[in-house]
Image 1 (cartoon, each protein chain N blue to C red):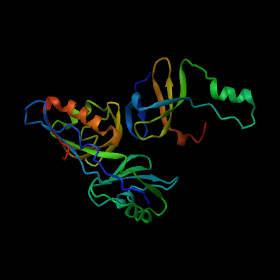
Image 2 (cartoon, rainbow over the protein chains, first blue to last red):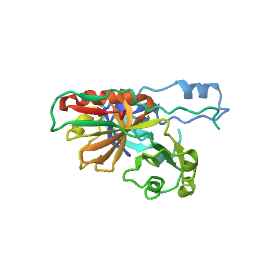
Image 3 (cartoon, rainbow over the protein chains, first blue to last red):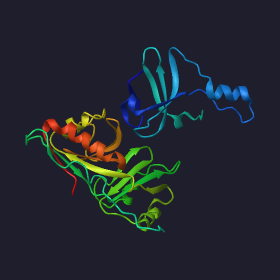
Image 4 (cartoon, chains in turn brown, blue):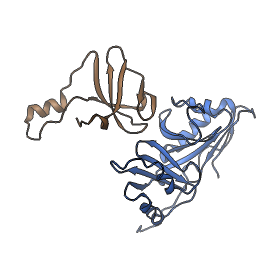
Length: 90
Length: 190
């Protein structure tokens, strides 16, 4: 996994300071969306090879949620942005 | 109102004290348990704009009292203990743009200084501590080994660490260990 994440607030920090939540592209279903939609939201995840957008929490730093776009194969980090700047709540 | 008086015991009262490591005098490290005065956690309200100029007014007027560690987040520290009335009395200064929470019970400060202080701290954190990148007055929340701490530069060769009370002695021992090659004098203030 990529070892240095360039936090937009703190600068480059080692991955040990972060907690990974997972896929940033998943949206919460409506309360009455049904069992299948909720099961998929809570449990089902893709395991992509290549570019992937994820929520990362800078737990031991500024404590902000970030959206990190990285390559799961090459470990390249493409973008890191504050999750609030994305204008979305997944 | 509390039914019984809480007894305040300094977190580092029983920590290792004395001189350790190399006998050198040139690059010696000094560790000090700093007074457990007040630690105020200040959090900005949503959309309150730039508060950089406002937050230091919460402090006691000493340099580096207000220490930013993330967007809209500060620790304001000082040597004098404050009553809850005194802390509450500071809220009008913020005019609803931020809130204060007393963390004096939760976090303590450790001072570390010496010519080799950057080398010692670099053993524990990935933050670039060079004076050009981390000037006096700068702060950063980071991991020292596995312990989360707010690192603040208070001088060319001096830093302060703000650490959770329960981790303070563990960090203290690690800092002594990290300083052994230069020699270290640890003062718990006992």
